[in-house]
Image 1 (tube, one colour):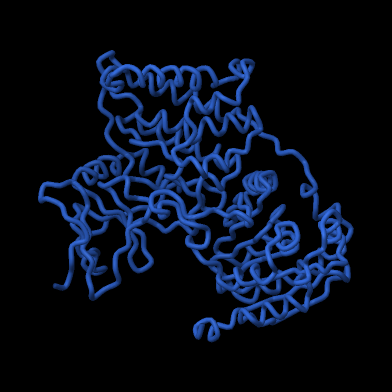
Image 2 (cartoon, helix red, strand yellow):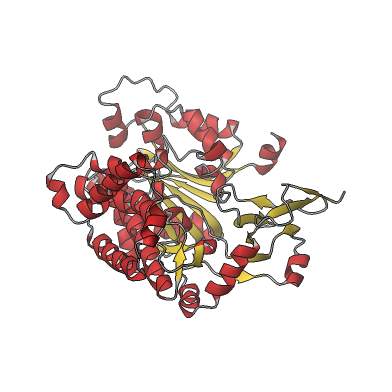
Length: 498
């Protein structure tokens, strides 16, 4: 047989069925899109598609003809999408049992809510409410309220799940309200009111924070804060009642005459509430690191020139800036790259960088993320495939590793060869800054520790680089005298032989 069925389905099934063709590249379903059987996302030859069932096609025809939806597409608030013709489907050899196939513009790098800063989650929530507000006016609604339906292109949030738009029947409640609270509203309220970093919580609890869990860290005084009683306490009460009474909640709301204006009022109140939320990151030793540390100030110009020369060498599709701090070097790289992922474990640094980029409206190809490299985002969810680990979402062509390696080796106790081995596994060019043990920051890290780091030296680094098939293309000693900058390239033939 030229093709084999990947799944069994009866002829009247409304699910999408894929056929894999042995003569062409396999279709690969997105590992996180399985929850919507009627509008699954798949990849083929570098493009992103969505296979629609007949039900989903009918919804697409309805929503794609609406003026508000066309405005969302034109403004970039919804991912650019087109329906393929039969000829286009045949040309791409897309062998599917589907009523229709959509093609989406590819998102440069997939990110998750547990990697976003406070303002990023806030902007994603506001985009969701904005879309809902426009949709409900013409009898359309979003069938879920997951922040995973939103991605960031630079600092611009973009709604990607066009299969979520469905017709709204008169009397139907907003079914996604609870999910919106658990994954967006409650995390934002906890961050704003109690200064709780919610990223680690959202990483563990992919379904979000329930109303009962939201209320636990709050005091009675917090009940007077906007949104806590209305969206938290009352929802918790309803959840307790629903757990003890066999009641069809949605059916009860419909029979009681649930009016569309109630949804519109709720959306208006939520938008006002979320816009007013504030979180101010506390200042710490990294807040003005580039300006306050004398050795850093002495080195900054030479470091800027070095990084700029490497970046100007050729344009890269994807650059990672590890330990980006205020994003200064991310911005240098952004002038010569399609996308820069600026990562830092300090939430305050990421928040300030995001706000700066949004306010300046410059370098719109930088995506700031809260990433702790000592404990980076793993593969989690169903079978460990629903949310991908950092390395599996797109490999960088250039990595900036500035002012970082001593923190990984000395503060994090990661053996230096392990750090180099991880960098080598990414098969990218690397700009690496190595501070010696004479460096003030390294001395500070060692002050209260037993120096067991015999592997931490420039000579040991060079051995590790050679063992991992790195070639040193350029090197300079920085003016402080205690730091060395290296431009490294992977030996592709050695990597291939391995």
